[in-house]
Length: 324
Image (cartoon, rainbow, N blue to C red; front, side):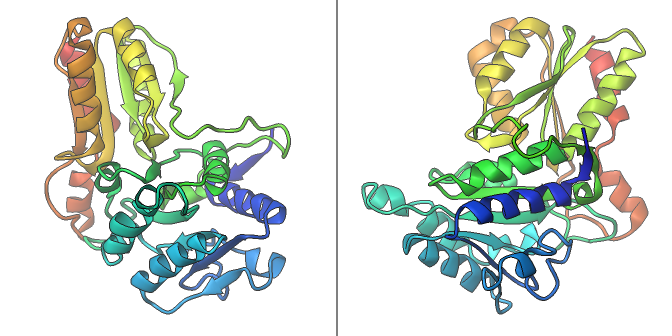
């Protein structure tokens, strides 16, 4: 099987779906001229003339225009440049695109994909390094996805592009250059939004994560294996809706749970997972739930301080070995 990068996988998804559906178009800053600041749209302007549109530096216009275009019958893909800027068009997101279909009794729909590069890079500092996915999991009417590898990046984006509901597609900036196996066109398995994957089976503890947090989950699982501890690792992929059945069934088998994400721990999506397990499967737990995330502070600029807010596999290993 061929290996391509996360960015190439998303580019393939866009090109394949745009070739099939002429109503799909892309709008955002520096897309037609530059191919996106991370190169994730490179080549699309030449392949689909007039369907990759550069916009003014106005997040309100980008999202508002996308919502209007979706209501008019197209399938816009809007690029947020950095997920950190998503606070600017919040009214357009949680009061408009999330609620239109409900408020019009299904007579109108907003098939829009909002692509939002997120996460710590290196010295991106406080305004270009955040993970804000948990904000939107609290809003009915929006789907939230966070793939962790090239294969899922492609298949999740293809599923988002054909969804009749708005989808927030968070794509970690560090993952753009990560390579992984992706089948040739026609050999892939379609992805259903809201489905998690068990990427490693085990019996001793369940580790749940998503996006770049899967590096910590899998890294910790590998270290634990050296000590004879077999962790079951689950990639949520989709956060809203999320596949609680897969997590609950795993916890019922392993009797222990560890959750990790790069986002700030306080109020992070890990709290939703922990609360659900506590509500619906507490009698299966043999130890307290472990939860890892960034400390409650802005992301520092200094490399030494930045490293301190990152979660590392060894953090998980210490906690898991303690509860075991």
